Length: 217
Image (cartoon, rainbow, N blue to C red; front, side):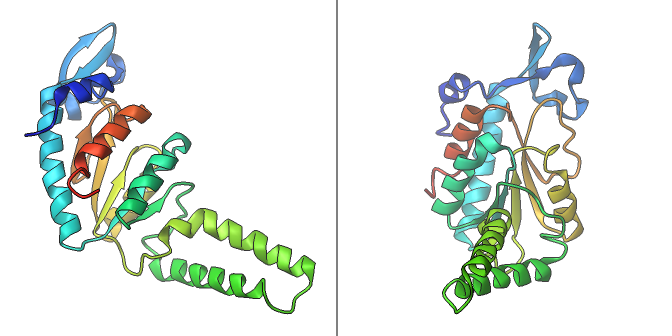
């Protein structure tokens, strides 16, 4: 299987949430409870990651497109790293309603950004150029990770289904497959591919991404 359980253990991938917050949707992945905390079955996680890794490899090698979504500030650099290495799109600051359900509108906004770049070098006053720059930066923060997304993605990968539930709802509405990192207190109904894990730990997310994309980057 080539997934070393030691690596998962060392990064606390197995650590779930408080027992009283457990959602029974994930009870089959829970191994035991200690000091009121749930602990995931590390072998089941390992098997799950092996299957996810194969699926990801097939997705990328068949030229299908992935959209990474993680609006947790402390995960931003990790998401940048993998999305850029894989030449995929990402949203790391704020999910703007309509990014998937009103796809054409977001393309118009990105085209506006290109126009603003050109205006900086045209015959405008300094005040006007500063306004153009300010608006361009705002668009870059919200939409910069989607610059090369010319069509809807085939798969959306999320690190937190509670924080980014609007993205999930939009993906469902337009028929896009969803993969998500889920903790023991999450309710992943409607998620096509779940990754049970400690999704509040930066090291846990980092090692899982390293594993599932190891054949590609």
